[in-house]
Image 1 (cartoon, rainbow, N blue to C red):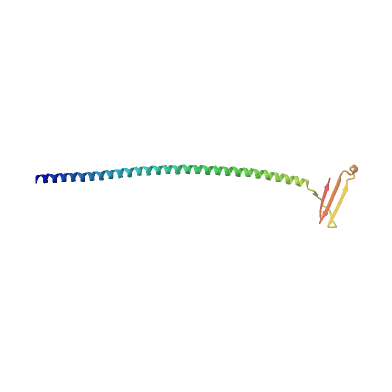
Image 2: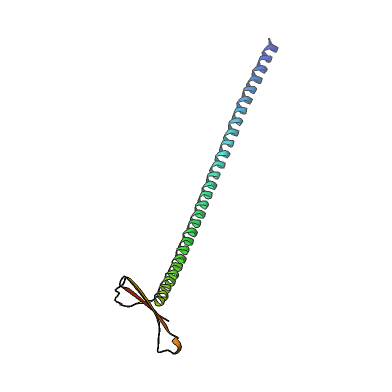
Length: 145
């Protein structure tokens, strides 16, 4: 009896210690899981902040690039307008020069549908000055050289 009683008490005490150790192991496992979960939550929060910062920086950069493109477009339009104005002036000047060089129209009654005459100015010695006139359909053109 006494040894058996002592043996059973020791067995119960060891079983109690084993259960306590299992409980403590479970507590440690739960604590470790909680710490790991908190760490992962912290990492996730930090990564979200970093992602937000990166998005914000990318948005700023995109806006700066858009401003640069708008500025370049305005510059190109202004330059194109300058070129167009210069071209219009050149065209107007060319038209004016061309109009000055065109033969002058004179009223010349025409019986025939087409007439042409070439002559020299007798006032100039040796016929240095010549004139040409032509008419067609009631329109006359005279050239003097």
